[in-house]
Length: 193
Image 1 (spheres, rainbow, N blue to C red):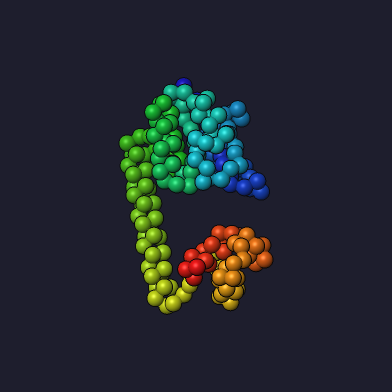
Image 2 (cartoon, rainbow, N blue to C red):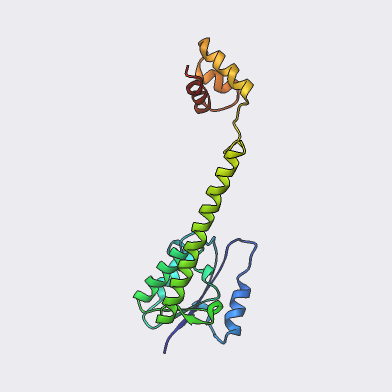
């Protein structure tokens, strides 16, 4: 008989994984407390690098089932989720996601679902990049300055350039203007001194 495990993750210490546990129980799963892993860690941390998830994987054996409420509990990035599911499938562990109709993501249907989800995620990422690039082109065309605000205004930069011409040291100028040596060196380069 298959052992059933559950993984519940929240991103911050203020959040509580209790709702995920209740959702798993409402779906008809009775998870023994020793087979329930609750973790408070960002989804941006790869699943296999999370302490709780890593310990869980060490306990899983062929034929076991891992339940998650949503795919994003495994990871924020489609590639990480897919890699995690493939790693579990390789050791014979089935992964069920309640939000996708309790589908076994390691089955043929689950693999197809994962392929579609991955394709949609890549499409959304590509659209985001395109929109960002278009926005940057538009902003430049409108004459907007992109990037971080300079630490020294134009007048201060001219004073720094004059001081460099008079022989003042880069370090002294950085201290005087409460900025980094790198900033002063960039000004020196910009004014071709």
